[in-house]
Image 1: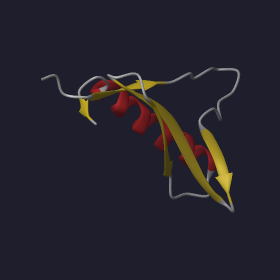
Image 2: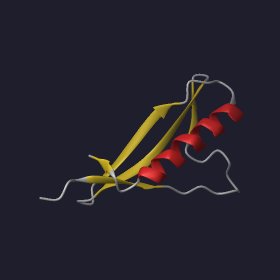
Image 3: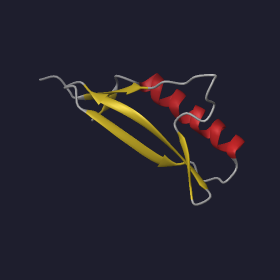
Length: 76
């Protein structure tokens, strides 16, 4: 039996440096879409725990890069 895994789906563009970010009452949050090996999409949202936009971008990039490295190997 094959394990169900998650793969990151992301679009980052230089034209929109705030892609995947939104400000919720002063705190920056990010989101990413994951797809299961069965084809189901999951939208994952997480707090970046900062009110500073530059810090939020750096945290978002670190998290998305880590997810991309593990993409396809994350157990669902």
